[in-house]
Length: 496
Image 1: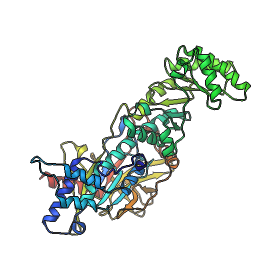
Image 2 (image 1 turned 120 degrees about the vertical axis):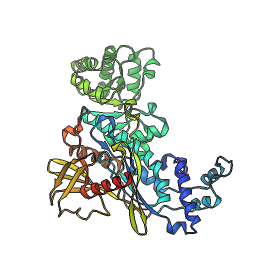
Image 3 (image 1 turned 180 degrees about the horizontal axis):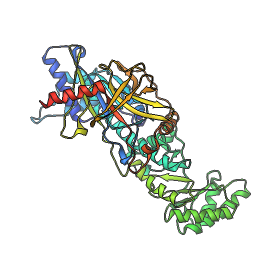
Image 4 (image 1 turned 30 degrees about the vertical axis):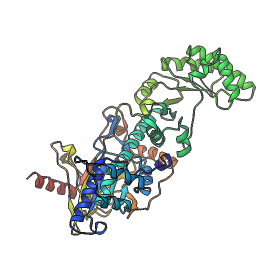
């Protein structure tokens, strides 16, 4: 999808240090006089995040479709390579050898990628994407994968939180004009729809991503006429099948009365007043009073739309106040993830193959939360008839007892005294699925509507406590016993 938006190569969508590290790997191999294509070390990287956003209890995985598009179109163009040749070091000499530029010109990705499908609820420290292949190739993908997954997952999560509080009400994404640039607006519209919004105001997103679009008129339409009544009547005459009138340009309740007059004229023509929109003031009071006016005039089917810097907290408060709002238009605070503008995902080396044996790697830190987990990781989600029970991270290469016929023990990575045992026969699903094998796509993403539906199904599988906004319950995520022991052993070895 991302390649539909940008008619150019995106292979330089990375940080310079990814290219300099790739150059270092290439140059080291060349110094050993080995064939860089055949003997490059194989590595495994895991992409994950450390903390749920917005102080919540869950995150919605999103962005895989754009990752697939990026990988399928990866390749350095002549213009890309010409630009890289202009880069210089501290001595003003070329940063990269001509041989490396030639290598990049013919580079084809041969990596394996496993990922958790879009629309899945996920939790801290679980690999959303696992990349395995030549370390040079894995390194070049770090930054683009992070930027593609981080932002979409953040916005999809925000939209899912809005959906939880909106319930069955219509939820609209109105944020393009406040988004962080063109890509921010387009990406947010897609992710917001997947997370739970019903439609967007973004027409280009509607075209490219098959998202329903909604919208009517702004204050400027009303202000361009001599009277509000004339503005409403004219709009209804020009577009009788799309009449939602913005009533707060001058006086809101007077505007509602003017909308009712327009609605009466529409009825005589065989049309209907679809809705009115409130965009300022006390939305609880105004919606209640507007509902009275509409109902008393016989417009019981006319919906009330509300906007004005809404988020899940404000919507929840309005509902508690008895607001009579049917449609919520959310803009700035959704598409910018206003209260937390970054997910903070990371991409960590977890293993390198030496002489056909995996050498497990991990990053240490003075902060326990920042100590990475080694291994070729997979996530197993246990469940029963009530929903999801817990997620266990295990190593596919070393774990020998991860079958339905054996019991499994899960250990909390931050408190080894917290353990949970799952008996043989416990239902489970392994979340990471093959997406690429040897550089070839082996998985087709479901359409955007199926992915959006998946979010709702996933949220239904979570305990209510995990979904609450204040002090949510922590969903159990831990390491399989063997992986926990391996991690502990490596920590002690590295500390020594």
